[in-house]
Amino acid sequence: MNQPSEDFTFTPTVIHSWAERNGFAHWVIALIWLVVVLILFQIVAGIVFIGLVMVTGGNIDPANAMGSLTQHIDLLFIGNSVGQILFLGLATFVIVRLHTGGESKRAFLRIQWNNQVVQYLLLGALLIIVIQPLIIYLGYLNSLLPIPDAFSDLQVSQYEMIEDFLNTDGIVWFGLLNIALIPAICEEILFRGYVFRAFEKSWGAIVAVCVSGLIFGLFHIQLGNVFPLATLGIILALMTWLSGTIWPAIIAHFINNGAAVLVGSQFPELLFEEVTYETLPPFWVLGLSIFFTVLIIYWMFQKSVQLK
Image (cartoon, rainbow, N blue to C red; front, top):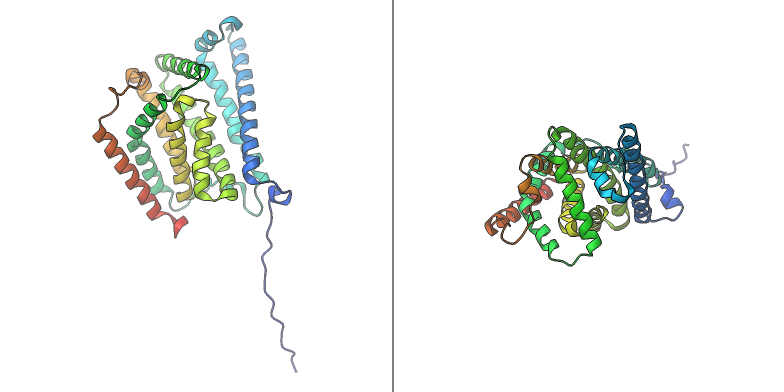
């Protein structure tokens, strides 16, 4: 007579990440990596810049460092791009291993392509355009806050160098590569791919969207521009979470920076003039910007599989 078989319940094996096995919070590792990235990025960018100046027969005057940077600003952008590719992009792929258990690094960073990508590419591109009047107003409000002279002078110097750079003949394609494309890919891998995901594992999606956006604004070391940068960071993180992939954020980031390159090279008076109350867009434009921004974000929520 056959004995009754015992019931067995299959329990899948849970593979914990290095961070979880060793008691480290995901968000702590992400913050440490951000500091390391900022330092190594600046060091390597500076080394590459100095090397390129020496190879091309240029000269760097220690007594007039800002003048030397302005004179060789194209080489400075190349140095920045090399630093971004090496550390914001490639090295971040290595650090991700500390956070992954059973999932792949591509899945952790949300680099994969899914069936929502195309519609979110379109929505993200439209959103980054309609939000611009709101971003301008946030920049104006930011300018009303007291900022230490050192940070204010640094930001003014940066804008002056970029303005001179974009006024150079035949610089558009070089600018689109080094100001738009490379930062769009590398910064999205670091912030929306890695930082947002690490914070999400620790605190949940909503908190991670807000905190990672604020960190994105602070990372650029532009206190006079934190409000608009943080807002853009939050928007990019939100579309990444709702779509399940960083590709819409990459495209939106490229459009935002690429438009600045095109406008700055063709109509510099529009991009670099000081924003005052008199030069702000009319209130009805701001109203339309807010309305369509909220509407597109609502559509994103409606279409998201994350909330279904």
